[in-house]
Image 1 (cartoon, rainbow, N blue to C red):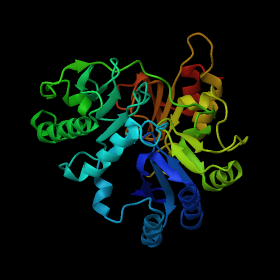
Image 2: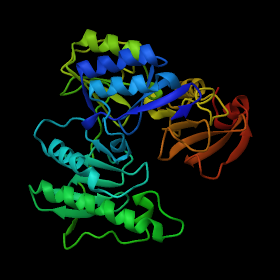
Image 3: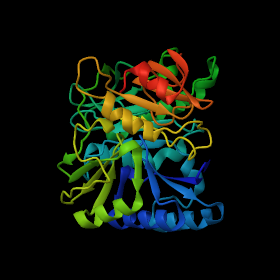
Image 4: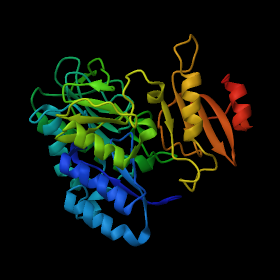
Length: 375
């Protein structure tokens, strides 16, 4: 994909985990053939930035050698499978996700953002992450397969992981066959299930268990957790942290977090190390000039507003989204404050998304601060 700073190459590590060697190899590749920056997305994917067109094939070959890109390019178009990051080898999340990955080739063509979430730990942790079909722990202790946006899911017989995978695939096949029959055609399951009943056979319905939080900066059962402001990683900083901590692997979370599996805690100024840092509640795309679609700079504004607005004061906003254009790539959900770049100025959306009707339009950064009460 072309961007304002060169080509953008996506990397989808299986089960959102890379070995130490893979992660260090990726960091070296970003420095030698990219801009030195790596993006971490809300789908727990990575993107190498700033790759020159003449280096594209060399980068892809290097990623294949690292085992981070499939040698069959058609596999890269398959749906994403997002997993709860604290899975353990042999648990339900790991077994279901592995089985699902092995069968993605059976699916018909689906929209590029269509995806699955495998969230089969003791409590769901991916409820705020983007996905179309969810496999979750049920309130009763079993598993449910749920269309995104549906209040309940179809209960899977206890221990029948193969049935959970089959039901999830069947929902995706149904989506592909049905999405074009509504007007306008649906691109995501959340919209389609609101107008069409999702089939589930004779399986009884159940609701998901109460949700839990993803690991936040600090120590976790797997190792230290670091946040990544705006999802932007300097490859040199990540490489140093991996080596210094002694981590054996790197896991990625859908809230733009890094888990250094088996590592020791090390302080770092390049990453978020405090669990309540307001930057964890800010999303901002690369903006101009890094993105050709953007007409405004985004991250410097997001950085300054985070400290000034996202406080613990009563009535203060809890979330902020700064989008360089109306596409809203950095955040799919709503935010208390959304700033949308348009023709070099900002539109202000309250409690919504970039595509929603703005409360005010055509604001300069200075006027914007006045409107939202920032000093």
